[in-house]
Image (cartoon, rainbow over all chains, first blue to last red; front, top):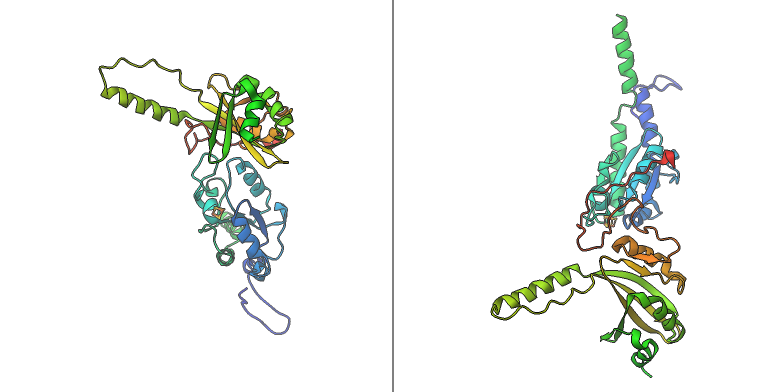
Length: 171
Length: 184
Ligand code: SF4
């Protein structure tokens, strides 16, 4: 959070957007969607050795309704696609998606009838991590990139536009 | 008595062919006798465990053979065209049996023609056949008669083709799965 000014005792001024971004970027709770071998790397990144919780991904929730970041690690078969879409739809806004590994990005080595050629064609993806599998450092790096992205966001942009339009209409 | 002899004695006239490759025995039996043969093998030869059931599609094998034969006859044009043998059935169902007491293994092969995909189900003899038979049905389209629940195992229910057949394209035909949760 960028402090705009500190005036005297007990005062702290900032922008509402920055306050919101501060909260969101410090607590990107992941939903671990490990479907294949990349899921093992994700588990490793979440466990104590690499400890993704250091960056705020503290609480791994196994219900999509309490999560912010869908971490899709592994192959998505065409049979699984409706389930993935459903889970994405169940997540509350704001939500982000990280595609871990070649399979989730493009289908990877499985250019076959049964594999979805990249989850980008069925749900919006924010960060793609290449690799087969990517190392846990790669997953941490993606999380840091996502945090950067969240901090550059303007969560109140739409509301601000509405206010501006209303003011202009009132003139 | 060696396993070979015991199998020969056990199956008698049901044995169409017995091959051995690097110590693996493979017997071919007629399709309509599968149930009798299997129960005989289980009760008399002691094969009490069914490891797997799967299919084989010989489409390309036979096409290549036919091509080779054509080339050969092309060279000797004067010769009278040979009497055509009916092509061997396209599919095979393989059963892998294991005897837990003697640790012997046996492959049982059943040839299945393309126009008659019905195969007797061995679920009544080994309960473990249910899922492998469902998989073989899913991938090749064998209709296992007498199977208690012959649904697709790997692909989704609305999928129409049998993807391990050799004439199915590797990258599929663009099938997609749609699930309408609200009506389920
Ligand atoms: S990208 Fe490689 S490691 Fe990851 S799920 Fe696919 S095959 Fe497995």
